[in-house]
Length: 78
Ligand code: SF4
Image (cartoon, rainbow, N blue to C red):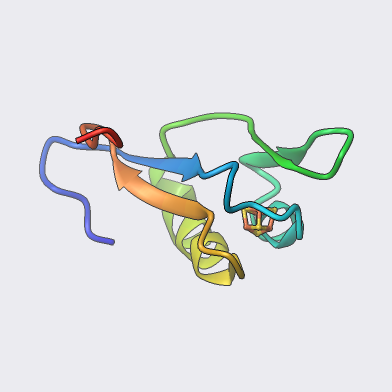
């Protein structure tokens, strides 16, 4: 994903699609932790520039496409 000018990339997790595989937690421990049931918890957002490449790899590694990288002005209800 390329960010549009004036926007900042954010990670988003679709809880309905997430099956708690934990791949994203291993791929991006700087931003994603685990709750007691193994589901991912975001530590911080937006994605800092120095972690953007890691965030993209984490998104690509999610087997259920539950983890997404979106622009800050993206409204999921639109
Ligand atoms: S890799 Fe995808 S399915 Fe697995 S815990 Fe992370 S968001 Fe959920």
